[in-house]
Image (tube, rainbow, N blue to C red; front, top):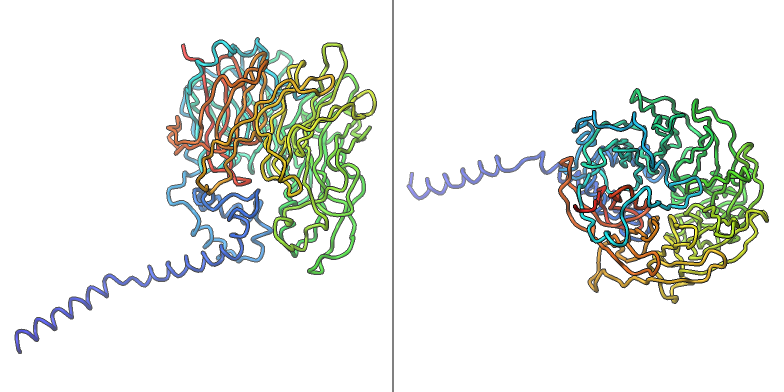
Length: 621
């Protein structure tokens, strides 16, 4: 045979053999599976997660989660209604398409990694932080006995340690403190007891679902930490015994399929007072869903046994059919009026105060967007003061023409922040309430909650206005303003993002610090803004805040002048060897204790940027 022909044949053979070995049918099948998964994501998920729905995490935030977390969200979590039309195989494929290959497993930080003999749970701590609002009246005020940080030494604050929550895109469980131990929770429902000085893990406990709120510490007769109380995303309430490090009891306080606990529990006279909200506002996005049947509620439980003492809905009547939507699905009303935040206790009048959210459907009720007073003893609604009438909104309203969006919807101006009961210098009692509309209300508890004065501080928005919490030192009322996701009717009003101080007796302004936009001119994938949506914290001479763009700021209480700042929008090295990064600060607020303060960073909702850290700052020597 001609040598040239032989060489040509040999070359062809090599090419064919190489093609056989290089071509992998499995790879092609996997590629096709991922292409189909991308199409499913585009069809069922992209509308919300492309930024069109403010509450939905952006795609980049989903892509840092593990497959396990994504599957759970689609099957038993918040997105189970949206995924109802998908088969288990399709859910699996979408999770594979989105999941991060190097997502930290939930077990990455479950084992204690520090000496537990230093735990002070069995010792008496003189000034513990036992609940979200720092006292029964939700003042969010830290006394000089509790903290040594002041205007003279605040510049010495330095980052001392960082704890990263595994497999998380947000951090929103505000810490509570007893002695040398911090208590907090991750989005996976993993309760952490951390060493206050080092951030190392003493022990963990796995709840059934996400725990969003602060963990309430129950004290025994000697004032020692005895139990932890908290609620999860499935409306379960837990009592955890610290002596035995074991679950004491667990009860479900609401049987609605999407009832949840977002606000922190308040503990008084061996009773747990529980705010109940829901995820049905999201369920309404499904055009085949019969919207809506949830009614907000408050429950009182025996702290020792978990036995239900009373439960009262914020809407008295059960929902009934009020027509059909465009798809022929029943419209049910009245509905909604959830309770998003921690109840406030009035010992003198034997009352409990909460703020409510909007109605989900029409006709609306008289108890939505209102401050309600319940009897501590019986749960009876003693009085109600509504700040805004006819506010009906659900998440379907972000989709043009969605069948479940109520006619003339919005503006979704909840009371997300809890009311505060305050006694002024003259001995007069006030109830102060901040609304997402940007309005602050002063109510008279001796006149059945009659409005004493009203003051517009911000322009308002779906995320506030005033979103998660104001603070007071008893002389001034400190008001954070976000003014993001503005309602169309208010879009021409200038934002008042920043911090404001008001006189308690009449609401007159003392000072305002309006923050400049620090996000730059370049378009960003996330909703960057300097507004303060998260709760704030006051001390004798300082106000601690965290902003949506990731900046922490501390202001002088007397003037509003900035005295310290720190940008959390960065990567960190964590004490628990989990990839750590900060960004948007939202929901929970700063906790100040002795010479330290603690705050979380990262919030993959409402257009915020993902993050997963708990930051600890300490006065440098």
